Length: 228
Image (cartoon, rainbow, N blue to C red; front, side, top):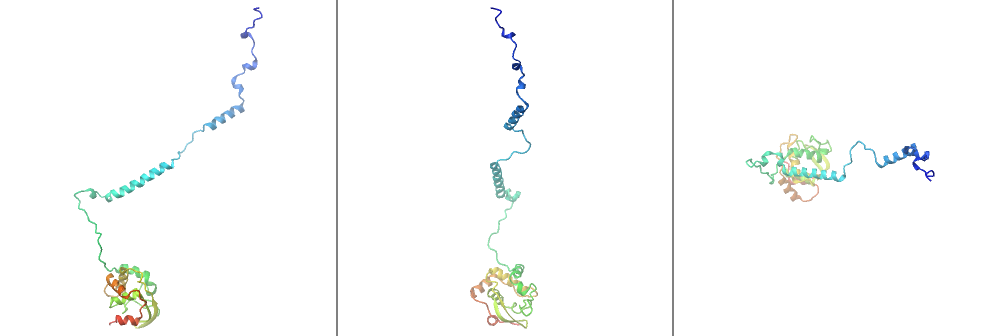
């Protein structure tokens, strides 16, 4: 009976069962497994991570708030602002009295009048009369104001030469102060020596003539004669 017993430890094993574990994977199988692992876990890369838009918005909002706060509370970055013993300057915000400004009048003249009368005030021979040395510019300021506000049409004699053209009412759409500055410039430029014009005088003339049409030379001379 003992002879018929078989000891499994003494039985020869199947050669295939003793094949190493690594031999169960071919080169193609190993490559496929490696590729799968690589897809599941990407290799780290150099660079910068994208900042969320919300974080960018928060930083921008904070920067804007800080700028507004500093502007309102910096005291113009002057140490004297926070010095209780420093002399405080009171801002003058009251109305300012009008002062005729020939320099401002020159700029307005260049826009409104120079295309005809020229920047030199000499006009265009036979077409537009000169303003330099003109008897129409000197004397009564109301005459000059009326010409600027309402314009003038028809024949007019200036410095012995007759002109016949059309001057538009360039001052109708200007402020009283602007008309006063133009009139002041014309009456004091190119050797002219007449007195300046106040804005209150322009307002007075504007009210008196209303929205009338252009003057003729005859009509103006009847109201404001030229004296030599």
